[in-house]
Each structure stands twice: as structure tokens, then as C-alpha cells.
Length: 217
Length: 165
Image (cartoon, rainbow over all chains, first blue to last red; front, side):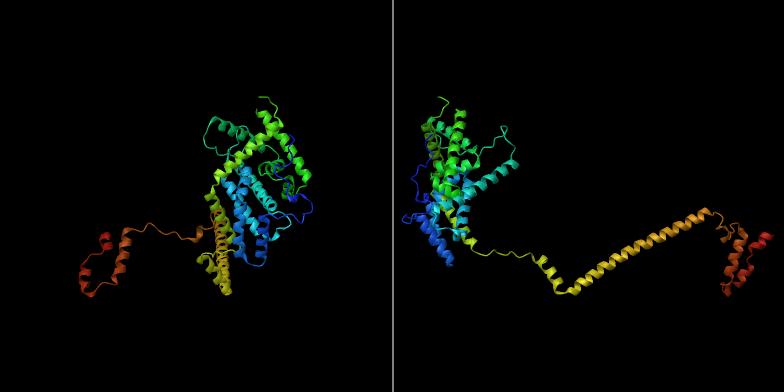
């Protein structure tokens, strides 16, 4: 598979030194304003602006969290926690970075923590499955439809199960690049890794997924 | 279907999967649910800025230590009472132990010398005759008889006189 680069055009954040002419996203501008308001003590005004920021990023956040957790309640919790953390630590936001990258990092870390907590919970509350392989909850079945949808759904379950078997770092990189459609540069900033490391993890993840999916055919 | 998964095929599978999961997420989080989520986030943020609310302890628990803190003499009195009680119990226990031990020792000594206690007691005669007993009884009541009954008493024969006949 030749496709390791992201599907999106490389963002301005790829450059090591941010280009001064690069336009900042609306989210980044808003986050800068909220930070200034909080620092000046105008918390009520900051909260009002934060509502706008939540509205801009909420759908994307839900999709990313759902890719990780595949559970509606956990997704809800992870997204809420991430936004609350963002507001609580808004004064440490570095305005030279895109807000989306900073937010994604917080969200992904929260999702990973929730996954670990869920695994612990399952370990102590449910008997192990006979296969011994712990897979996440099955995603809710899509609306009943024609046979093609069922086949697609089954294939989707196979892919989800294969993604679950990836090592954590590979799974995170794969999910962010492939599922959240982030560039390798954005992922490297979000995870605090070099871009080359992100590319290696992505390559290995896709190679492993291919093997796992070929086994299932 | 061959076992080998071509690059294009894999890319297509992953794209389909992504679209499918995104559709699931969108279906699970419709606009009204997102609105509820947003209001919850804002409510949590509002609470974040406030200092933590202190919950008072129940009155019963709060007042007793406060009273003791206000009057340290009370603590001394309570401590002395407790110490006195403890000392009394211990002393009582020790006294009881010693007295029990002494009594046991005396009993053991007496038991080891069976003839030691014999002379201390005088044998009480259990062979008092019936006449002697009745005579003693008459003599005892002689002092309390009224004068009007004196002639009648003299006419009445005595026990020992009858017995002598």
C-alpha cells in the first residue's frame, strides 16, 4: 500500500518553524481570545466564547472519541472531560500551535485512559471469554437494510477487531491519520513524536492490519 | 476471493470503515444530544471556577469536640474519672485475688492438720431430757406471771413432782 501520507493536504503546522503568513484557524483565534479573557479575570465572557469553541469542535471530537471507544456513554464522557480540561488549562495553550492539535492530544489521552479503565473494569467484573481475546463492545448495528449493508457491517466489525489488536502507539497513530484524517505532521504534534516516527508507526500499523484482515478472509 | 489484499482494496476497506463509523457516531449523537452535551460541558466549567463547597458535619459530631476544646478542665475531669475507675477495678480485682488466695491457703493448712481445730469447740449436749427442758421452761416463765394467777399456779402440780411420784 503506497498511501502513508494523510488524505488531507499537509497543514501549515508541518513546518518546524510556523510560517508567519499562515492563516490561523478560527478555533485557534478563539482559543487565544479565551486565554486572554481568563488571564484578565473575565471568566464569564471567557465561558461565553468557549461555548462557540465547543460548537466548532464538538462533532469532530465525538467522531474521534467514538473511533477509539465505540461506546456512546464513554464517548460522551471523554468529549466532556476533554473540553473541561481545555478550559481549565487554557492559560497553558501555546498560541503558535493550532488549537485542533492541542485539543486532539488532550482528547486522545483521555480516550486512552478511559480504554484502560474499561479494560480493568471488564477484567474484574466479567468472566473472560473462552477465546481469551478481549474485544470492545460491538458497535450498535446500523439500521437493518439490504444484504450489502450487512456484509459491509460484518467487514467493519472485522476491521474494528483488527485495529483493536494493534499495539497502542500504532493504533493511536492509525486512528488519528486514517480515521480522524489528520496529517502526519499534525499527529506528530498531537502526540509529541517526530514526524518520521509517526510515519513508521503508521506503516507498521497498516502492514499488520493487512495481515490480520487477510487471515480473516 | 484471493487471500492477498491489494493496496487499493485495503484503502477502500479502510475508507468504507471510517465512513461507517463516522455515520454511527453521527447517528448516536444527533443535534439535540450534542446540544445537551454542550450545556453539560458549560455547566461543569461554571462549577470549575468556584471554590469547593464545604459541607458541615452533623451538629452532634460538631458540638461535642468544640465543647471539650473550649473547656480543657473538662478533659482533665473526664480523664481523672476514667483513671479512677480503672484503678478501682484493678485494685478490687487484686484484693479479691489475695483474699481468695489466703482463704484457700488457710483451708489447705487446716486440711493438712485435721486435729488442730477440735479443742476449740465445746460439745453441745444434745441429750437434754424432756423433764429438764420443761423445768427450765417453767422457771423461765415464772418471772413474768401476773399476781392474779398466783393461786391457780400453786394449785397446778409441777412436772417434776408428778415424775417423782
